[in-house]
Image 1 (cartoon, rainbow, N blue to C red):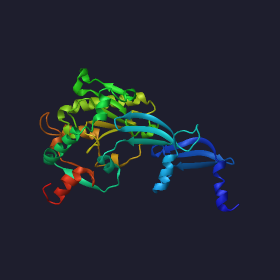
Image 2: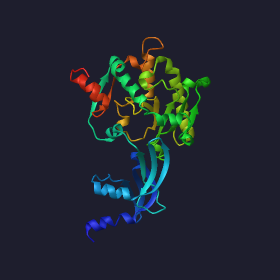
Image 3: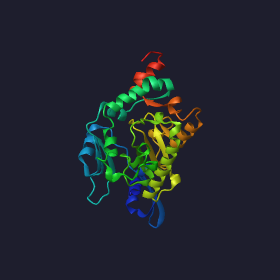
Image 4: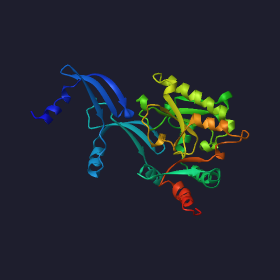
Length: 318
């Protein structure tokens, strides 16, 4: 037997003793075992998806054991397998958006990224009118489906009616559609506020500090109660700016979740840091995040880059 064949023959001889580690959101595992009585480590990582259309079409045909995890408006999510036996666990998490919009296509297409600085004046004159337009186009139907009890009610982890049952402080906590609902180190939840007048972190004021601290405590407590394997200090809470949708929400993730572009500096703003910034602002209770300049990243296909920040960069009036 040549060296290559001898090496290939080792893997079937591997006897599993225990799972040693799991990372990359469950996509990579390190197993401790033995071969012929000798301690052995085996690391398995799912290979990258192919890029040619023919192979991708074959992949699509081989999808099997598709199990729906939830449906809300145009969004659907599933667990599935690729060509395994009936007893094999699902090895894919699928998200389906149908019908998708041009904005969805832009969001998921490769694009360059730019750093921009949004001043209070730019926000007032250009950004807030843009946000208002997005909200008027019905892009929040799936959010309102949850808040108004039409969808995903069985998934809600916690619902807070607000301090002293004040509706303006009410919120709920539910799994993010991108989480597989089982891998705790890739846990991803969303806290959605009930009120409709807070669109993004830009709408937060000094008057909201007590509520934000209350919400932080309740969200963390509810998460560790639901998932007792997780400790309080294994969670991080943040908001996006610009967010994917303009209804105030907080992302709750496990600290071991593999960092991606959505958690990067310039996209994710830590909730504790937002609270600290509000506390440090001068002025009365109406002083808020709309009074400060924010620096963040934008994709080059984003409407705000092409319509606002690129013209500003080029010294033109957009």
